[in-house]
Image 1: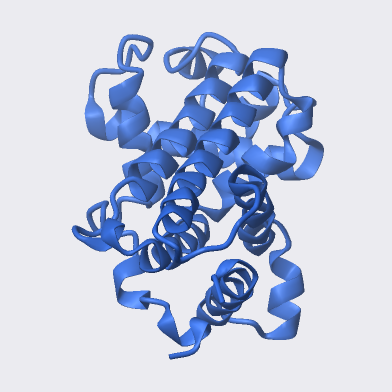
Image 2 (image 1 turned 180 degrees about the horizontal axis):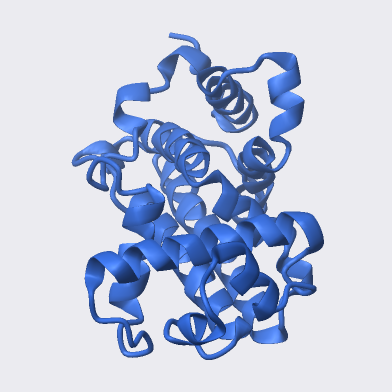
Length: 238
């Protein structure tokens, strides 16, 4: 079987999360649960709906002017919420930023560490699963991943460090599988850490440069298969 044909699309549908768990409503529900000590709105349905408006407003304004230039007054205008309404969810812009970045990081970690039972015994299959699952996850949460990637250079130091550590955590997940493959004689990799770091931009390209692949008519399954084949040709032991 050719490397590209060996991918497992059914196993890579982010099934470690329930259906619709990557919807904005589900994302906001998790954020509220994680930060409930900071949110003063106690009606779950209302809190979730308003937080979704807030985050969608952040994504809209950031795509126009950048997060750094966005003011809370701008956010109030685009969401239709009052300044007091915004402050019932967070105390300042940086707190809101941490809420969003934490959710993205926690979701990636939970999904990528939720591989199907038994797949860890086969490093090649596990690597294929990781690649496709990561691409499908970023497809489902594309606006949030683009926000975290494109805005990182303008984040305050603490948030920038958090974003960097989140990226390194993803690389470590891939590096662990690559190292296991080397130990089992499946992969030939001189530098596991560097190889994991080189795979990451291939995953990011799908959500950062979406227009390029849309113009080429490249569907997600073809992109995933292409990345898998490219990586396998580079690292599979002859």
